Image (cartoon, rainbow, N blue to C red; front, side):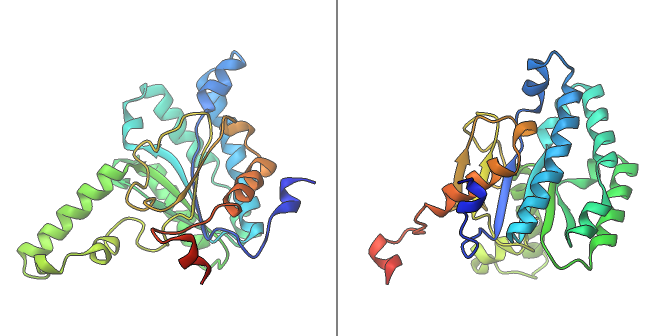
Length: 245
């Protein structure tokens, strides 16, 4: 029986976040340039997006480009930006009723890339199925720093009292304010760390790590991660007995 056949469709995680790791190493194993791996990885994005949408996932957030990735070689960054523009196939969004959004320090993105992204956001805004979110020029430290600066400004202006600042106030000002925290976070490629990704939001997320490089992470691998998630008991600080009541 395949993992897809084992999935309980009544217990699908509402929000799945993914750290898509291993493109470069996948290409190196094949004697190819890193850009070759990124191209193969872009194809996996389409496969996983369609799979997640069919299963009933409401939000799929993909760690596409971190703030630290700007430190990579200039030619690799340029290739990634070009690939980003070329791989935004609106047909995939429309066919699967997927809307599109981005989170991150978008001011750093090239004007042409940002224009293309905004175009895709607008054209898919009326779609009512899954929302595909790309984390671009994103890191949790950037997000939290930006959020705290804006809260401090509100306090200075007298729009917010310091004693009223709580988790809800912070949450409403995060880049991810429009979606629930991830139920499941998947990282491919064999590394076991969060790499500055959704650190606030993943406080109680279920974590799934696998050695499969992202270009090889297909439908069955994704379904395997969902099956693993469905075997977990999510207690959120409570006891098993409390959960069962």
